[in-house]
Image 1 (tube, rainbow, N blue to C red):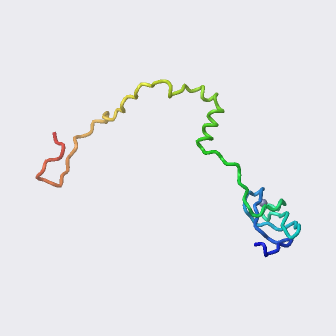
Image 2: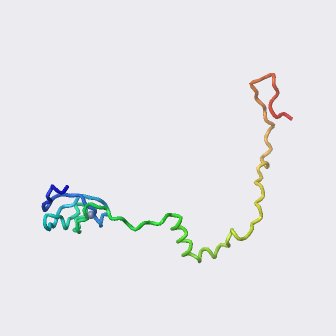
Image 3: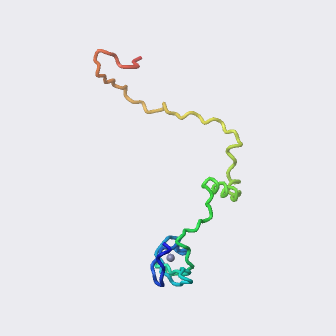
Length: 121
Ligand SMILES: [Zn+2]
């Protein structure tokens, strides 16, 4: 890497702060054989050479933390709805599953003609 002396106009990889990507850059400025400035070949913006290193961004908090942040900053919405956790809600009634339409009596089909159908009352 070091043995290849960069020259003006060379295409090198660098991180473009505008594109926020590692992209091709043209060497725009050299000081003592070292690349100082580069021009992004994608957006043509000039910026200091970053040694092709992607800068570490601010660590994004986890989604759960973001959620809690948003919830903490939005008390107005929380006031509209009563807190469900504090109020002991009565247990919900069981879903009326058995209220089906009166269906015709089931016809049991059995492969075993000798055995009676299961659960026959
Ligand atoms: Zn760019």
